[in-house]
Image (cartoon, rainbow, N blue to C red; front, side, top):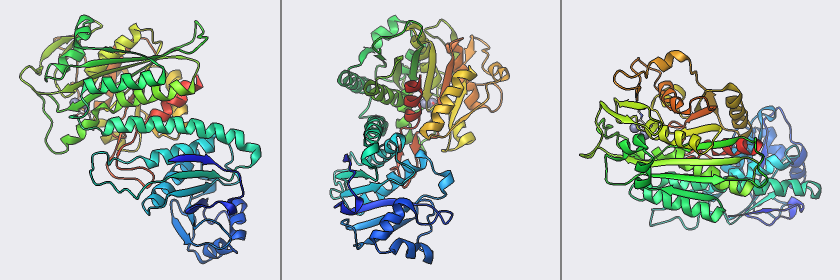
Length: 496
Ligand code: BES
Ligand code: ZN
Ligand code: ZN
């Protein structure tokens, strides 16, 4: 799909469908919609009066052969209330319109921005929305729906005066949207097509192409560095683990600038190990590498966006298998930091590999840490598939992330980290244990476990277990991997 900016009058756009969006009855036909209405002889006004077009959120009205337009169709998308509308809603409106038209085998689409939405961030939102919406998970289907594709997406409505801002927004949106799809493509891969070694090879290729420094630690190097927590998870199966390290260093780096450490869980398949999971739904555990894939996508975007701070991305990757050599409940492991861990449940493996990932990121010089992980089923209980769970050790740092989430239009909710929860993971026979001994609070004890390895370094943990996978398709996004948190993290790092 090609995204084009076109400032010529939209009546002259020769496309399969011209799309715009319309607010509910609180806002009558006005601005850009009034302009189109005039061209089509008052049709929109009549549809609105009769109640057929009410402007309800994601209500679609497709008009064929509209008189006065070169476009073969006019698509009106409901956008709800004007006062609640923001770049996040625009992203969804644009994405939903794209999927609606694509499913009808239309190829050339023009999206007209409304009179109040002519700036850089709206152009960015439309580009991000349509690129994410265009992503399909039919890679392994031999019979592809070949006629269903969008060839060109024209962004219209801008005047020559705001052309530069629009172009800049589109370029940023393309970088971010494509990075998000890069992440989603990795997450979509089944575990037989994406082992830790294959993930490392793909990460290396991405980094080299993007001009980022990359180092892959193999099982020997991992053992040499005494990453005992990561090794303990990997010992359950034949696939060797990998530690992926990618670094972005800006030109003219200031000596006192923060160094961001991004650590992502990449368990390419989580059977649970000896504490094995039930069969029902286990196939979903191919997405247990979503945190790592997100961080790799963030690095891909940052390489193009050229921000001011240094970023170190650390992705520990392994399978969690129940083989004859697997670790067993009660085993005591020594993490790279020297802390000893009693593994009471081998299914709480994400925190083990992150323990070494976080410690290593600190050793490489990170002054501010963020980890992302499909860490707990408990976060699905707490926040369902709506909000990402946010845990932090430093409110100032956490507030920056929450503000970035807001501006990126991703729902995130901060969870408590009271000291009482820390008691839950005090070990009986080792320094700490990998599951809580108290009842409940499963996501918080998981977070506290990782925090033990972050120490005094400001740290944020994102539990994306509930949000990294769409169990059902949304009008603006296919079923499957979402690429959640990528936009927030890119926004955060570029705002520093
Ligand atoms: N990968 C799972 C968490 C998960 C659950 C991800 C649902 C996506 C959807 C994680 O490794 C895990 O198994 N966690 C356990 C922890 C428990 C043993 C303390 C869980 O949540 O049950
Ligand atoms: Zn697990
Ligand atoms: Zn897991």
